[in-house]
Image (cartoon, rainbow, N blue to C red; front, side, top):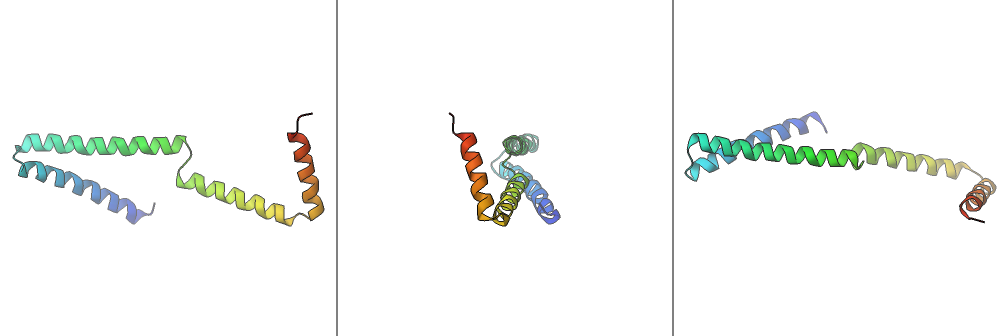
Length: 102
């Protein structure tokens, strides 16, 4: 995430708080009650985002993990292409022999 993206997320978060507060005030709630409910909305949104972040971190579906996996795949593909056809055939035969139970 770039710095400007983080700033925009923060501004959006604060804007959401103000919008929820003024919406609740417009619906007729008192200042204190509208403030409490808007804080509840913001805390719930924050905890939901935090939980989704935790799930993505634990399941390794974050952007960095995907980039690392793509890099590893491309690296091993280049290494495979550097091998001669005979070396490729030998490796395939060895792995086939290891995977076949006898």
